[in-house]
Image (cartoon, rainbow, N blue to C red; front, side, top):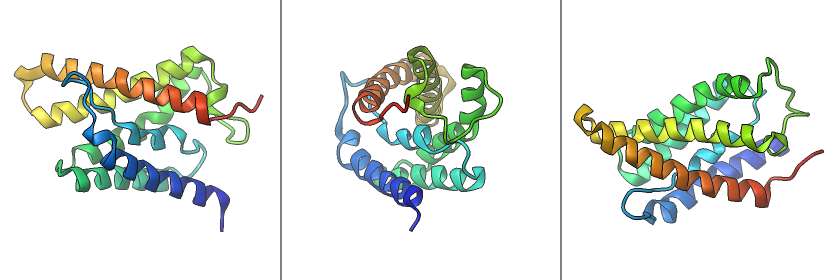
Length: 169
């Protein structure tokens, strides 16, 4: 069995279980709700087939929706950031091509890591809360929920990155 398939398959399942059993029950001050499951989108290899990645991202969001009874908003947001992940990464790192053997998220400078994670996390959370409220007059509420949740999720992602991802340099 392919080691990459096993590694990312296990990550997929573990992130779903963590999100629905732990992180869905956490709320910081009523505004910040961590959505740690998007880690899969950040860690999936950038040079793998995009069609498979899009199917996996959609399935991940749909799984979270199924357990959270949220009607497809996680699937929509996760699919959106999965689609725009590579263009945003290319813009932030100012690279045109990525070699999966040489590319490692943890080897990026901290500013590029933070920018990449924050942009995609904020977009994801903004879509989630906008679809959840589904009113344009609640834009300030949507923005504040998205911002606070993004920072909370970002802290968790950076802690995970520092603890579990190894540098290859």
